[in-house]
Image (tube, rainbow, N blue to C red):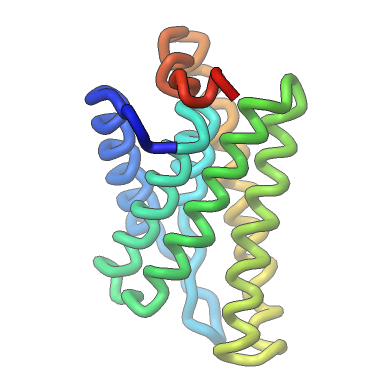
Length: 176
């Protein structure tokens, strides 16, 4: 997936990683009882995945939220955030790339299920079913807001700058 990345793809992935980290740290709404929080990072994850493809969605989503956890005092969550948000971006970007007109919505739905389900399972193990269940509405609203911001923003970027498609579909993806 990451073989033969151009300098442009590396730069875009790095910038979007920083964007996701800032969006995650910028607005944090605490959720009790697990002391988690709702953030805008999912908007960056979906934007990266839909505008620049699954690989950049994975890198920006995983590294960006993991970095935000480390910087924001939730370092113990960083590995799980890397996995959940990374796979959220990977799957959303892949389904959008392969799914035609409905692929973006399907990517948003499946990516949201991955993120919400991942955190739910981790919280059940760490805190129990009751506290984990209280986090689901917050994570759902975060995923909805992320898609409502990320989808139109990615569409606008693709319309304004059509060459962005080359960054989303490098030769390794087109050959499959």
